[in-house]
Length: 280
Image (cartoon, rainbow, N blue to C red; front, side, top):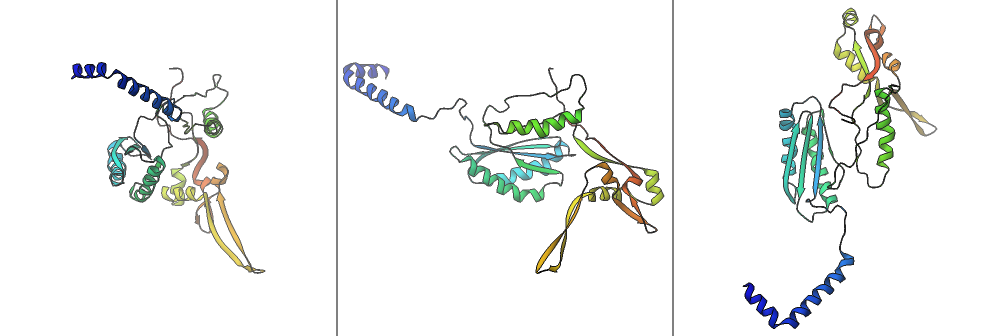
């Protein structure tokens, strides 16, 4: 076969030369219109669903979170493969579509299907679609520290979460910035068992009172005044631990029992999950 091809090329050298010139001209004409990317996309259009399910073991995450999401995504048009990974309190589902599928249409399809599945997930599960990223993935790791210890872990995390993260997200081309480590602030309510027994209260009543301490609800409208309805606002959003401690838990003999009387309310760090390292 190769011998005949070489013989034909030698006999028809003029024709072969003209074909080579035509191919070169065609390639040069197409070169300016050829898409160029420093990191070309080598993967099929993929939508990633990240679900955090606090308090669930890996097998529970797979059974109650990952499997329902996978089953729903398999029925979408254009899906070529669905992959998943389940860990403690975390579920990842990759939905791959056929080549040529518009990524924004694919994300819309996944978002619509995910909305119908959320009601079947555990209450602690929060599913969301991750931003569109390139194959380079993670670009940079930054560590925020206080070598002399003058800045607390709470303040370091607050700076990284609410100031540094927002500045990095404002940089063109940055799709996502995740902050880990440090300490997340939260209001903590530590019940006093002796005080609960004294007033005949339960931990459930204390938890309900703490939940009501930071809520906003509609109180309706006042009757028409000058042909206008006046809305009544009921704002109960706590601004400090002191505000939470003033929340009424129950009444005994006509006297209110506040949260501060049966529990210690203070600002403290949330339980840490995971690890992070700086310089080894």
